Amino acid sequence: MRRVAVLGALLAALPTPVLAQGTVTSVAPDSVAVSVYRAPDRDSDEAMDLDWLQGYALVTEKRTVAIPAGRSVIRFEGVAAGLFPESAIVTGLPSGVREKNLDADLLSPRSLYARAFGRPVIVRRTFPGSGKVTEERAVIRSGAGGAAILQTAAGFEVANCAGRQDTLVYDGVPADLSARPTLSIETEAASAQNVTVSLSYLAWGFDWQTNYVIAMNPDGRTADVAAWVTLASSDSTSFFNAETALIAGKVNREDTEPGVAPTGGELILQCYLQSLVPPPAPPPPPPMPVMAPAAMMESADIVVTARRMEMNAPVSVQQEGLGDLKLYRVPVPVTVAAKAQKQVVLAQKKGVKFEALYRADVYGDSVGDVRQLLRTRNRKEEGLGLPLPGGPVAVFEEQGGTMLLSGEGGLPDKAEGEDVEIELAASTQVTAETEELSGDERSRTIELVARNARPVPIRFEARIAVSASAHLAGSSRTLQRKDGRSIWAVSIPANGTASMTYKIVKSD
Image (cartoon, rainbow, N blue to C red; front, side, top):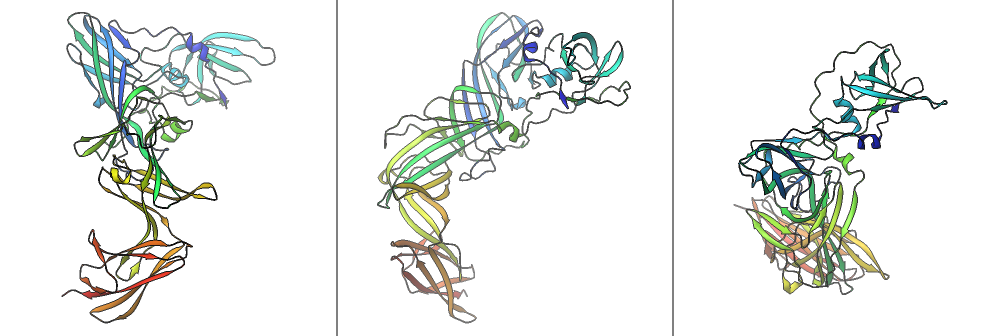
């Protein structure tokens, strides 16, 4: 297999496409705002899948355009490749929009070859060894996949065969092939004028999440908390110095199919040496394929934008209401880069009060895993008191002068004033088990035993629930009530044990 060399310099030297009279091109926006919506089917405390970004963005651009009198076409270059054409709204034009179209076929060796089917080209042939170079006219008679079949004065031939290297030289570039994703609209004006238009549209292939890093202090009761927002884009367009907002919550959108990504890419053709006959005309091209997100993200870079902030300094991120959703404004303009990730500091808080404990869920006489838990309230009194978008959490503790990862969990969206519980991994040092001490057809007496194998005291909680046809008739320890469950809270000494009994009685 060999590549048909379509030289970049050759493409650059091709004449500029001739556009229809009255065509105006807007190369880039004057300003841009990007609001990124989380993937609707992903839980807020679940990490996003960088190989398949299922969120989307609302992009709003301001552009200054000089429109001529009469009917004209305005081409907005540099829009998102994953733009939903049906969502595009253009305001600020004298007579509105008559027609709009996403020019999703981008200029590339493959698309240029495909558009040249049945058209004349120049074949430049280089013969190895002698270095001899010849040129002759030919007509492309095959599609962009497989062998490149050319019709010359001598008949039908296959490019890149018989030890040659063939280069295709094109007379020009089709007018509808653009080097950048382009949205074109048709409008009409009574007179020539400069206008500032607003272009808004939805685009797929974006997502965001918040990452929390909690560094526990030696006292075991406070921690330093750093919050970062990670923006991810699988789109081929970058948005520079964008006013960026993050939308949390689920939007009910009926269309679940992603938009059409631009086609393009390299041209890879084979030498096919069987006997050649004039091929039939190719069928109409299929719908343009959607670029696989995995391929989009292969070369993704991570760019970190760190804003210098003093510990406990006021956080400039503001939560705003957006119907039933939550909107978080990023404190500084950022560049939402193509096929990349960017992290932006949201907050840094020092000395946040946390209660570290272990918790197990008990249902009747069955007990689940004991899990580590960090608990606080999202209030200024505890050192927080700010909007907390959901996301993964990493907890570190100092061990021998080194900060080591001690657990990972997730945090759902939390507004100011709400309780915060971060559940970490199942514990191997704190365990719980139940045993039925006695029972009959109407009642059972259960013993719950919790054991602490750690060399330090710990706090332990058991959340006890029973079926709807039964109730707790009594217990050997004082129980609290929260969220419909009975709570047994106890301190267990180092290498110690704690136990309680309770009775489950069938309801009448």
